Length: 285
Image (cartoon, rainbow, N blue to C red; front, side, top):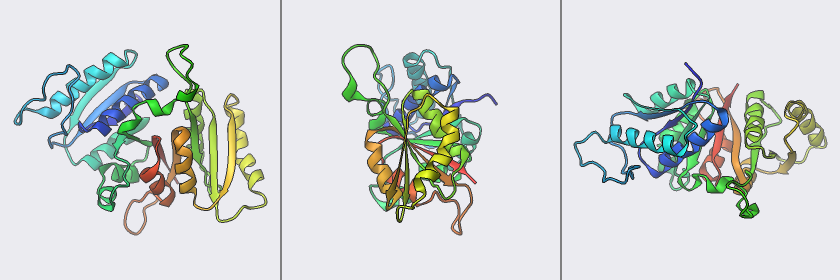
């Protein structure tokens, strides 16, 4: 199957924001965008692209949602080839399978930190815990404005530079897939990479270890300005703070299942709950 950026759609504001984000990402990758509606339940209320009223109950609103969204994305992102389809079946396994066929899967997120029930019952969290390919969660308010350095806008030109990409790095088991995703994301955005490593205490050799891990990737991506910092305490808290000035936060997730089934780990869990920027979760061994 050709490489695509895939996005899960359900008609919610969060999923529509995710679709916009995914379209921009498809432009960066130079590959098609695949819009997927999983399952057979009726979608959330949504605002059609053409401004017409939402069809009344009994009409196949999911088909209308896909048609309207495809038209909107094709109009706003003319350089991207967009496909849209509905796939029958439970959303979690459907979207996990779609993720396995894509360069990355993008899903909408409500922040996941409002109440425990929302977090534990979230389709997005369940997909993140199972997907073998990177999954990006996007909040409704992150449709685009928060990703760029708006404070640097001077009125000259149509775009402003992206904010830095932030990477949560585990020096105990650094994984090349997580590192490459973060460096590649920064390269595509022509921005810097801020690397955050957290620990219980500052190790004497942590700066050298950071240099040893990051050095080969800096050689591969020489145009990226990299800043690395070792912080004391919970890495998730520091990554959430860093997300306030980030275009994207990248964290890893171990692919092994725990005793209670697939899980995403405490750092990724905390970042997905509270980060203000889109969050990319990259599975690794």
